[in-house]
Image (cartoon, rainbow, N blue to C red; front, side, top):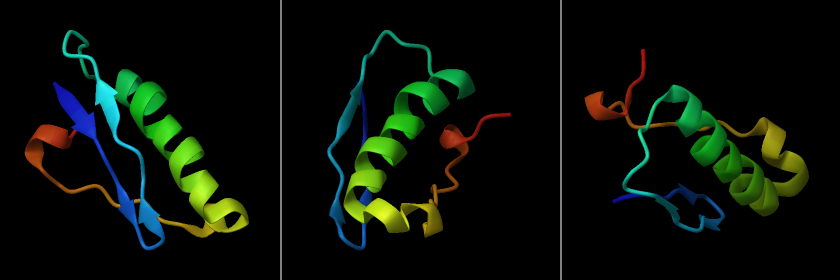
Length: 66
C-alpha cells in the first residue's frame, strides 16, 4: 500500500491512497497523484496565491523517475 500526504504552511492536505496493484511510473504519478494533490489540495488551501507556490519533493532514490 502506498499513501501520499503533504503538509503546507497553512495546513495538512488529505491523504491519498494509491492501490497496491498499480504500477507507479511517471505518467501514473503525474496524472493520478501529483495533479489531484496540487489542484484539489494546494489549490483549495491557497486559492489565488497557489500559482506562486513551490512544491518540493524529497530526493529519496525510490521516488525518482528517469
